[in-house]
Length: 449
Image (cartoon, rainbow, N blue to C red; front, side, top):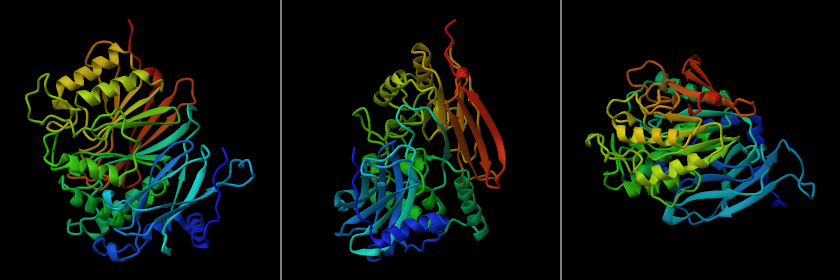
């Protein structure tokens, strides 16, 4: 299909060249404080969201304006040519939506698989207000590949001006983000507590996410440099340990969908759950809050973590998946938390394991955050016939509680092998690989004997 072509403005081309020359300098952008954004020309973001082999979603926010916002994009490192011999270039103009807090989400189509693109978001009435970024598209649909995923959570308090941190402590957080970027991930998973709003108030949630993206510049650089997928946990959904009884949870849901550019919601249900595929691996972004029974509810067969609607959707998706690894992404740990995780939802754990064994669902990997430390445990099957389920706990990139080290996890998938391999590494803020786990797909098979 012929791709759209356009003449990029000199300002946009300069911005794209800037990315190639010194992309890291974008982290030093001098954005205005949030209460000045309405009268300034600052652009919050951009954030690269869901990316496939031929499409990309890019989010940006420029405050409540009546003028359009423009995305200009160009292909880098050409891997071929269009049918007319021209590399991909496009210009998309979009009017901010007042019903969605004036955010914009661009959808770019007609891209090439495994190709890098540079882009710039600017104001239509002020070409000097430019925010650049890059991303690389996914491998061709259905093709197995090697790729790298960064996993982080519990970083969302950089916008708090009075959090008691010294400048050295703040620099330690910044350095951890730089270490994550230095590892060269192809995409990143944000596993909850992406901000510490502790509220279901729509405007407060929006303010918290905007301030995070203004003040936490290393995170802002990461989000504009690779596909970014997110789930929430309690502090970016509502109050501490909040659940499906939280008042105002629909406002939290509304805000989440407006500040991230995840894949579209699936299954026709309510909540943030959805899925995507990359390089032959299927990822399931789960909602561990909206449908959740209270933690202190009786631990019987009426107590739910995912809720029946989401649970049924997940099982059907897992049954249909042919991927050697099926990655379940949610905020709460399987067993590490005694008071706010799957550990106190015995019925839900048991019925998930039963579904895995009864339907011979292989390759399930669990990803979580929450506990302000990283770990790579594995969990024995609860019914007979299962397998040791690996868990990737990545928590504390910005908040490490009583623990000394900040941390994140890098996960490498090699799905090109006859027996695909997943290798997870815990990286601390001093650039030490403190823990490594390698799992073959053949180790995650339901026994039939």
